[in-house]
Amino acid sequence: MNLKVEKVLPYNQNEQKSDQIETMFDNIAHRYDFLNHLLSAGIDITWRKRAIRELAIISPKSILDMASGTGDFAFEVLALNPTQIIAVDLSQNMLNVGIAKSKKKDKGNVIAWIKGDSENLAYMENHFDAITVGFGVRNFQNLDKGLGELVRVLKPGGMIAILEPSFPTNPILKLLFSIHFHYITPLVGKLFSKDASAYSYLPDSVSAFPEGENFCKLLEKAGFTDTKHHPLTFGMCALYIARK
Ligand SMILES: C[S@@+](CC[C@H](N)C(=O)[O-])C[C@H]1O[C@@H](n2cnc3c(N)ncnc32)[C@H](O)[C@@H]1O
Image (tube, rainbow, N blue to C red; front, side, top):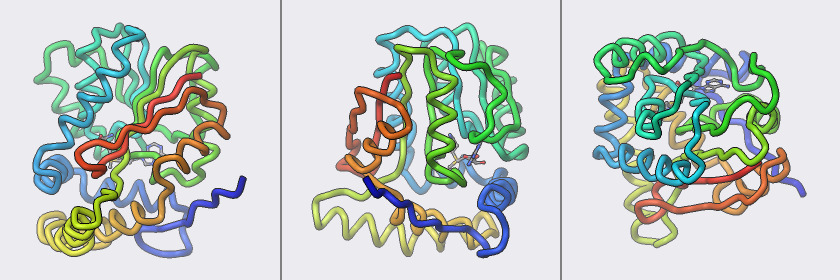
């Protein structure tokens, strides 16, 4: 199987992708939540809730929220009443926003905020009951390695829920979504975040990323089983569920 993922980088072709991603999210952290909810009209909140409903069937107690950023997925995970949530991200500025928000949340102290890289996790194998990754896998420097680490730290029988933006299949919606994504998103992002590259990287990286069955094949290659793909909101977002 040849599923080569085209490498799209935010700033230049010389530095490592992970360094550029860290810089990019450090730059936009103060505006991330505002722009995220504005550009998705708040629908991103329902996508995370939908993912949590899938995980509820195994009542996970120990959960890793990989690429946690400002923690919106980690906060949704609290609904499952876990005893431990580990929120890992490359960007300290994103985590700092999450830490500030957690102080105002009921049970926010269940979350531990850790600066780290998905490709090199400091956890034993078979550690977590469940893993969530919201809009993060597309940014991994080495996707196979990052997914391999997630399989390693997940318990046998454990579940992973991954969200990624995707393109609707209906041609009219696809056209409208592409206009929003390729023209409005970079413009609004530039206006509010002062990092024009970050919001042109977003559509470019989504266009280059494998969707649907192709991404399921990558999950299986990494060692996941029972992979399922659920298109959400006319296919504007993809929810992937898998087991170890
Ligand atoms: C688009 S944000 C998503 C944040 C959050 N999960 C959400 O649902 O809103 C992507 C996050 O992935 C993080 N990230 C990207 N690559 C990573 C990696 N290899 N290891 C850890 N975090 C990573 C970025 O720093 C960024 O905070």
